[in-house]
Length: 128
Image (cartoon, rainbow, N blue to C red; front, side, top):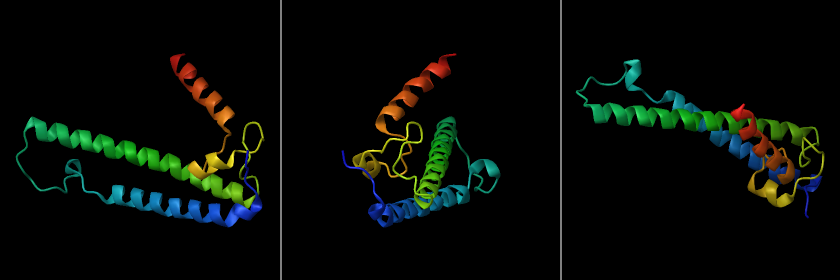
């Protein structure tokens, strides 16, 4: 298994910085979107299908923003781990995270084994 080493720091630093920029732009654009409910839209006649469509789109936009906020938090945490040289090691078990996982998900904080455990425990906790 190939793992992260400090020679890869510039590459991952650039990837994470770029993703942070993208997420911040997405959140800014979402916040700047006019919504019919806030009174900034034009007055127009709408039927129930138009209202339902706008509500559905608003729900999707809200979910996208929520995911973006969560991912931004992960990216910022990964950048802190890069700075303190703990990047590339699982936060749970301390083992090295496979480089292929980091290449696919640079903000990954857990190895695949610990991630699987967390994903298995989450649905169990929700059932209680």
